[in-house]
Length: 191
Image 1 (cartoon, rainbow, N blue to C red):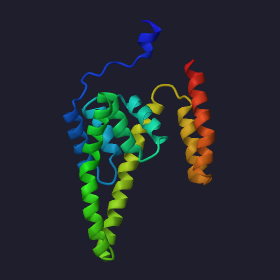
Image 2 (image 1 turned 30 degrees about the vertical axis):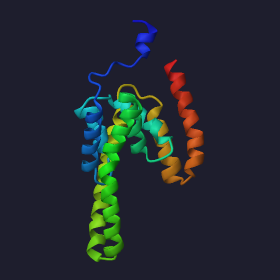
Image 3 (image 1 turned 60 degrees about the horizontal axis):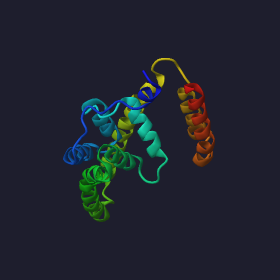
Image 4 (image 1 turned 45 degrees about the vertical axis):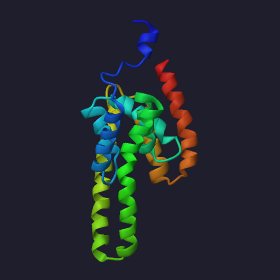
């Protein structure tokens, strides 16, 4: 196999239409209370098989460094990857249309009834459920890092957790050190 054939990504089994992009992301947006990352990953990787777990992690990692919400960036990047700028717009509209309308309505209701004790209890329960969903997603996303031989990736993850979560170092400085370091390590190990 030639180097260029090995380096190019495998062709997609099915390139979704604009309508499929819109409705897939619409489904994710109405399913993802407390966060849509788990539902987006499930759709991309497990249901539609539009990406492998590794491709999803790579795309999400790139979106972490773009300005704006990570999952919205991922929606736009994926739509553009499938159908260009109009695909990005279709995915974005499906993903954000209904939540925008709902949040305007909920914001108006919260402004009026936000002091109710029952609402505070409900929001406390929703926050706990959202944290559980996020922990579940993180473990699934970390799975490809630990598959096969153990490389540097788990140690970069642990260094990030220690620096930010335990040592409470500023995110900007941690990323300024770990991003170039992890890129160099990945480049070195793949040569």
